[in-house]
Length: 320
Image (tube, rainbow, N blue to C red; front, side, top):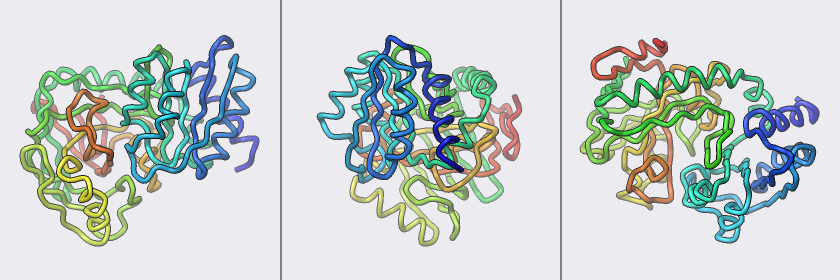
């Protein structure tokens, strides 16, 4: 691995994915645990931007927790904001307000040096084309069904809801997404998803599922029961303090990044091509009304997905 490769990956992130221009100002927002990556981005940005600032904040407690108020305000003053942080800032008011102010925001929750070096080598133009095709299909869909051999069998109504392409190319004013990226995702209709979700890949805040798969019973858009082993108990511990909103079915996503691998880090795991992720908690960034300080994704391996009865994924193979 090496400093040179990390510097190259940081340059690609800012130059290719964020398209930083010579007349722009850039904010690198990081924390103690991701500071080496923040520093690499800061150093790379010195050669690309008019002005660049490195801001370091305390590590957030959970994904979706707001940054300090001073940091949130600072985010609205910059044209480009890139956030390598231990916990996710994607589904926060701070990120939404920065985008409303015109910033292009790239979030990198849980990013590691190894992951950054590996995933920044992906062909993001090809990923973008694949992701946009998938988003077009989801935009025209009223009902999504997801099944797996382990027992996932859930219906997610999505009629009239727009899917979002997270392509890894954040080129327009107000754009946002993860880096690394590659997913099409959307908010299911609130209060309507029903069925069973069996998460066997990984879960945000937990990592790889190594004990028993986590089984979620869903009724009217909420998880009403969590079954499994030690990792299911960990999930319950994360969700309980913020109940009942934390049990909301917040997101349906499909990964489109052919270079991503399941590693136990949700930033990369949810991008793995041919996987489905379903998130619980905050859905405000997708147009929903569930404002809660948590957003956690569970990765479902080898899913079959039907859109209005037509097969879209067949046992993890994307049919587009």
